[in-house]
Amino acid sequence: MNELLDYFKNYIPISAKIEDNLKEIVIEKKLDKGEIILSNNSMKKEHIFVVNGCLRSFYKTEAGKEYTIQFAIKNWWIGDYITLYTDEKSVVSIESLTNSTVLIIDKTKVEGFYKKYPQFEAFQRKNFEKRIATLQKRILSLLTLTALEKYNQFIENYSVFERIIPNYQIASYLGITPQSLSRARKERIKK
Amino acid sequence: MNELLDYFKNYIPISAKIEDNLKEIVIEKKLDKGEIILSNNSMKKEHIFVVNGCLRSFYKTEAGKEYTIQFAIKNWWIGDYITLYTDEKSVVSIESLTNSTVLIIDKTKVEGFYKKYPQFEAFQRKNFEKRIATLQKRILSLLTLTALEKYNQFIENYSVFERIIPNYQIASYLGITPQSLSRARKERIKK
DNA sequence: ATGATTTATTAACATAGGTTCATTTTTACA
DNA sequence: TGTAAAAATGAACCTATGTTAATAAATCAT
Image (cartoon, rainbow over all chains, first blue to last red; front, side):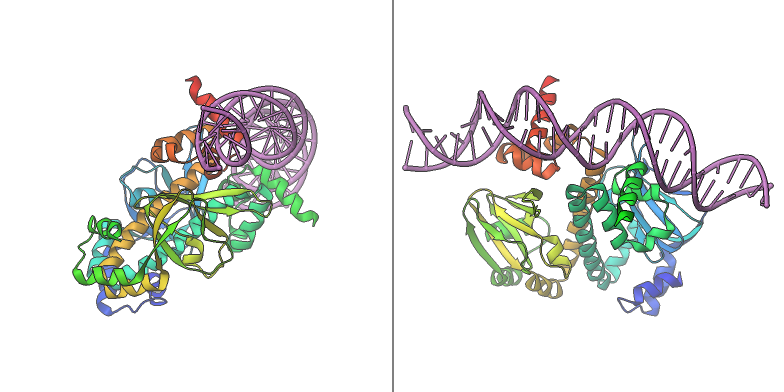
């Protein structure tokens, strides 16, 4: 819980009242490695803040192929943004890649919070701007880059993840097979 | 200009004062078919509202290949969300696909507007939520779908565009070649 | 430490979609 | 309305990445 407060305090003043209010709407949860915290077909609308550990959101096709949408570590948010922000039911699952601790806040509670503390609207609007830019960049990468280029870019942008996340999961984020990632890694080493 | 007011009035009350203020910060511009309104390498940060006509934002590789990021018609917004929301310089251009009329608002003016009229923060926050869901869906499509599936989905989601936009531009949005789109279209007809 | 399980690599082959180039169809405009 | 330009299609060939299967390396649990 204090991790979330510290996180907010980096960006926005948190009064004692806000603090209390936050404590009322946040639920802490410990997750085991491999535990699914949100499964597809649910209508659960919640924001997840990572206190420690590492999680991923992913989409699984009928055929069983998995595509990672996002990874999240300490101080990151993760969620199913399609369920959260549309009326469509979830196609996404979220699992914990390690033992981890997360804070969960229900969407309606967050909305109440915006109403009560308008400064959070501005804060969130700015967050969303960054997220939109990030998503836009990923779309461009998916459109334009080869497997090798995608991997190089991933390493450059997300070096934090390189040691934590197994390569086959990175491959599933880049939209390539582990074998193809292996080829890319071999190419890289050459230089 | 009235188009923008009408657009806002669908979502949010617009007082005479807001109306006047909006008029001060908005610039109307007529564009010829083919005209570039924003070119890459610029640092111009502006939001574009389409009054009529059709525009597209796109990325052009060194090799000259073009990838369409977004199309926009009447009552849609378009912009370079990477330049707008990061400190990075633009890699994106925006061109008018038809003769068109647009309204341009500078980013700093928009930010002033949020400050002055906090109800726009909430409005924009909700817009951004929808945009995030849309971008997320596109990422999933790019990751998981074949050329044919992408085209089918495009037709389903954006039938408005089907008649307005030439196929080779649709291909550049889907990340495939016109030839490949042609193959997909042939497949479709079979059924 | 050691065997079991998971992850990564390698190789051989298959294929969707790219490339090149030619042809047809559509659109624009004089 | 006819002609030039732009867009769409088609065919032949090529290549990056997928697929399958085997092996090697790393990690985990007892």
